[in-house]
Image (cartoon, rainbow, N blue to C red; front, side, top):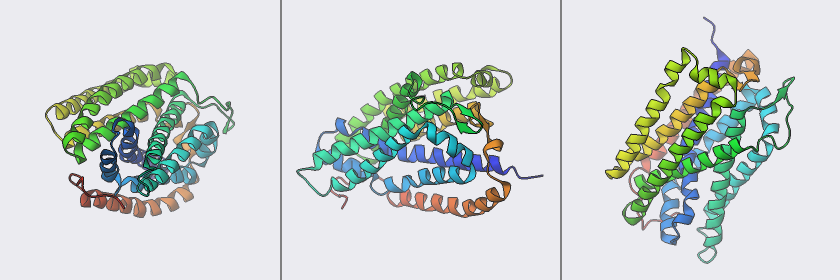
Length: 334
């Protein structure tokens, strides 16, 4: 039986993107929440909670983007021109928040300006990721395997809603992460914020889910046609289960459960997008098989991925294990 290399690689890249979203999502969320914690000490504790892992989380973005270029070059060549502006702004936001993260520790008097930079970079990065997702879901105009749309096609009411949804969802991840890693008054405020952002995230997931099928006939048929509708019904059911676990964990002073439930909301939403897209990698324009590089290239790169991905998983897991538990408020990042 022949190996379906394009599908294997699509799964690897999808996993890398999902890993980036759930891991870098919570540290972006911590930055998004910065204005709601005005005290310098609280912000120091918040940044200490992500200091050991935040830069390593972005490894998955490099793997996903680099893998897309190598394995699906047609997608890279058609999607990027359609999303130049949001992607450039996202990258600038990530760069700026990285610089602000380091420099806020080097000055006491000027730290407020770097704190604003950290918040602004985190918010722009999260919002632009949502914009890019929305633009991909609503469809990209491709003719003869080249982008045929306009410069501003990515900016629509739907993409603005998805941008807000991802930003608030990241804030939820950040709030549940702070609930897990901090204690005292900071944890109590994070728990209250998690309730608010959790309700907002669920509402926006509902809006986007109801809007998406009417953007593309393929989505409508996939979600409401038989027999796929039978399997699609499980996703909203599981989302409801995650929502209950989030609420229950926050109201009963659980620490890990709300974070896992928030991650579950993102994972299930990602699965829902996958159900809508498959077998297309650019909805309605390019299938996974059509966009893939030659088989020889896919096999060569797969050998490297088989070695590299477990290594990334191993050191990521080890970092989280070493720095498990609550943050000591008296210790600082230097």
